[in-house]
Length: 190
Image 1: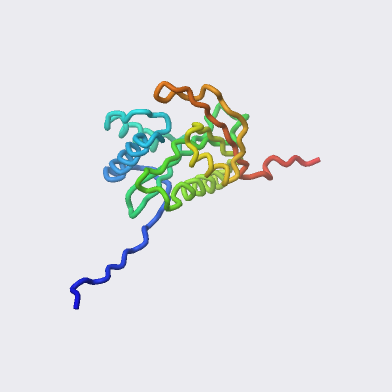
Image 2: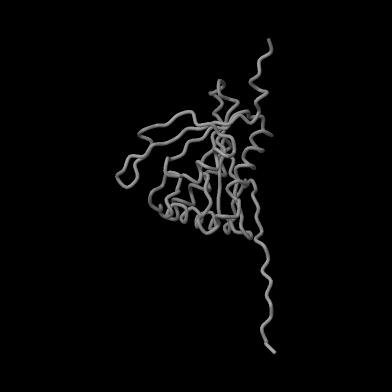
């Protein structure tokens, strides 16, 4: 007879939520996940890891800015990804119906669970609930997983910037996308 017991592993607990304030644990998780994303080449603009205090101030600033809405993904309670909606400034009345999706990433160690899709779904739902009709975004050409996600989610590429970013001395293209989340908002009555 064996003393070994069968150990049943539990499925991971996945959660996406809006985060309006940061406690120390969340700030640490968020910074660690950001570092992992930067190291894997998906640091939403950062090419090298900034000093920890710089990164922490960045995230603290995000949650204090009324024009930004931060969503986080959690894997077993640990923050592992984000996206933000940037609302238009009050002086941009002509585009008051649209928001910008930015800083969308999932740390490499948390990929493969559908969290990127969950983040995108939550951002779209929140934007619609707040009365926005369009989500705009831009992405480096090298971010193929993100591009595939956006295109599968119905985002339409409207253009490519040939000089979008410089990474390791190489010039990269960037793609611009939009999605109508409330198409009725643009139907005009005859």
